[in-house]
Length: 339
Image (cartoon, rainbow, N blue to C red):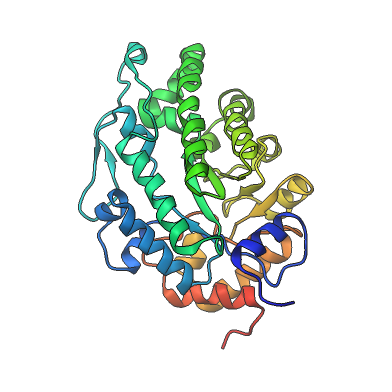
């Protein structure tokens, strides 16, 4: 088969058609910034830096995706959350925006097209579209409603709220999901082909709670994505073994699984419903392993992931990952021998 573009490769894999190689959908954030030698504060706050970093790593490591994911505080900051950006470290929420449940009555929903940090993501998508056209799919990103609620309220507070004031949580989710839906809509309008949805906190709740407080909102966001012709990717970090079947009800076209999930079980559950993406260990294999470890793990995951499998580590590529390990992944996906 002739070599496909990344865009062609992605669409054919989603459709279950033959491809020249498995698409590489690794998530890059801190690694991308430091790969081009810029501090994280610039990566998080300047779409030009973020875009250039992702263009470089996409070409250097044969990725099949360009992405504008950076940190979980884009929407939350535009809601009014005070976020501190150290020069070269992860951003930190200074304190919850909703310190008291009564603060919900004062919560004002931002317009993604006017919010400083959400608008910066929209500009990144436009920039990447101008640079790469339709050769490489561009992935936008939104926080899931439950994850966004955790950002605004604080994780520990929200966990208590789920038990003590579930109706209040429902009201918060109903408000924030409308912002996420509009943010997804504007990202697709800006040129995104894929919308990733991060709902990390969902791995920390029971299946019953997931189906009540996370799944319906993921469904609403992905319904809009599909109406606009986009591809939906669901990413929930951590051990999601107990909600795998429920995750397929989200409507996601691609579902990521982390390293602690049984890939055989996930492939069986996802078969015919969603493409599986993941799940070799990003730390023990990609960061700390040898090129041989990466090569074998990539092929092992590929062999178990099903006919529509997308290659990726279970979560973000860690900062400090040896370049030779990322190149080993590319070699394995091309079907070449590791020399």
